[in-house]
Length: 100
Image (cartoon, rainbow, N blue to C red; front, side, top):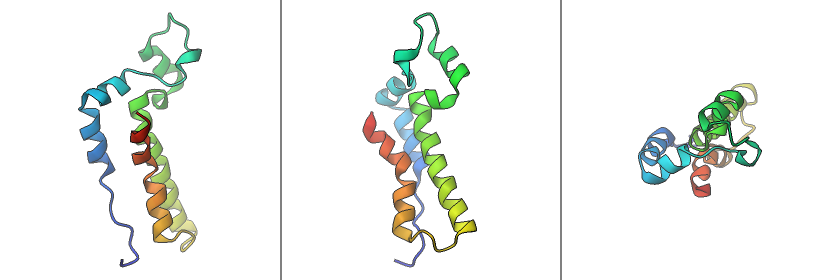
């Protein structure tokens, strides 16, 4: 290993998954549904609480947060993470797929 974190094609993985029947099912479900009044549509729920409330969007948002954290640590605290830790953080988004 050269010390560089290998690129993870998460966007491609996410798009492929989103195009599947499971991806569509996940997109139709919302997080925190037990708190959602029955008269509130999923679209309205998402508009009120943000994209993260959509189960499919949650996957890429979680990945984006982890990626941003790694990039900020690289910039402001070089050497804080070793390459293996960076991979673990970046796989946070991919981990979300296992929760479907």
